[in-house]
Image 1 (cartoon, rainbow, N blue to C red):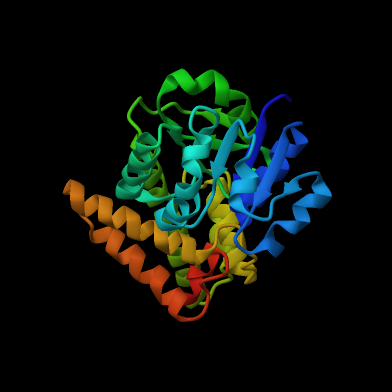
Image 2 (image 1 turned 90 degrees about the vertical axis):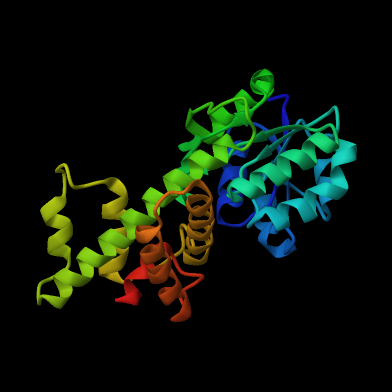
Length: 284
């Protein structure tokens, strides 16, 4: 591959994405604020940069996978002038409507090519190159980024020419994700509290219209008490907060969203913020 890719942020998702790009043959440089989170990628063939400016030097595509828009802006703003006219900034973090607009303006102000590109999927799809990418922005950049997108995901949904529309769609998808996780937790807890083996609920819906791979995946973690993080609960809670903000701004009823938010926050208060989203079951 002639394309060089920088991944800024090597948490659960950024690490998985970097490894997928390396397997696809890209030259990959990584950076993380906590350097020890990036170092293991050196064994996979990545160049580990000591600072963000070093990381983006010479990159064709710069991908950000950081916690929120503040973290993205703090990291990227000092680098944008050096990226202008050279790199495409592919912003994959979940930052919400206002955050996406803020970052798009930042890119425009510095003359940097930018695509708002949140992704659907957690650690396992990221490791397997099976994410769904939701880019919005200048589709004239498509040729420059599509090989990277094809490596990271099994599907790319080009949302619109308007930066930020990808993030809007991501919020709708994460609203559904949160609904599924809390709904499964409710049914697992009810099955348990009615005196039955909670695995029976998952067995009953398996393979039928009520089933989904995600329900089985998260439900198994709930039944087994295995909360090894794939999508950390505190990240889901952050995203639900962004969905709530968007719903209020758009006039969408928030009754269900407020209930979801309360369950995730209760699990966080119980000390499960760094565990997988399946740990929401502890709120029952």
